[in-house]
Image 1: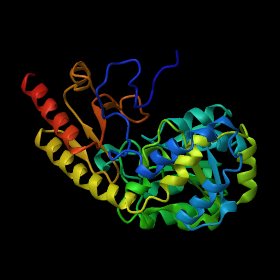
Image 2 (image 1 turned 90 degrees about the vertical axis):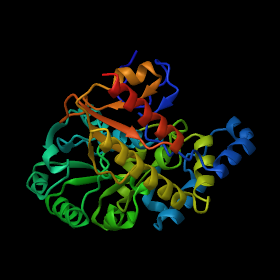
Image 3 (image 1 turned 30 degrees about the horizontal axis):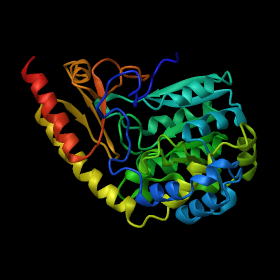
Image 4 (image 1 turned 180 degrees about the vertical axis):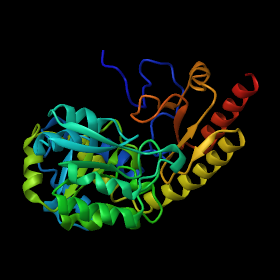
Length: 345
């Protein structure tokens, strides 16, 4: 069996409360659920290989042309397709960050260089990264960064984009958690699409569709889109995912409601974790990254609660954890359980 290296492992363990996977606590939009139930007969035929209705809905949602969109089986699938399509020789990654970048790049024999993010700096990306960009063919940049939850400052993002253009480095901006960020347009790299960058988005987190597998990329270079399309199966997005995704984008007020709810619960969890003595790092997303002097993972698992132990991230060591922002009742349960664990030594 494959080793489970991400959050969301509820299959080999008895879990009742999963804080290890960062999924919208409000759940899938009602419009998406209703659309799935009403269109079960559509699952009997091959899905549309061009995702026509879905692409049209994404274009309206993102405010860009349909020709600059490609849909796939989750953002992770796109990371592999992009690596196969571009075949980079040297890559730049930040550490810590999402592990699938490195796994995909290794499949094309790409040499990886890491820009280490330091704890004393809150794991923030600094301008020192600009010196490393010319050495790379490709740069995967995650914002908000997983597992920390912080965004790249807008001024630095602009400098990164321009440096990548100058050095001919492909910039892949992973923004799968950007829809959770207040004033997200300010922090998104989407405004720089004309510079030839790629922006990755997913329905996985914001629309709670992890099991349906649906992601998309935005890119002004249609040649790159064609190359990415050719690096995989034609039927890469199921009929169910297309139906649910199209319906979800029509749900009025869902994202605004999500942002308000997540912000309030994130503030509650941050405050309570600090009260319990943990070192909490600022997050703008739907998860919280913190440091613990105590191993809380095992006693929580004994109580059927899963958190994300982050020691297998490049650049991190034992003692770092990530928790998803869940519904208030679950968040209270987590805090109360951790408090009892600490009191019992």
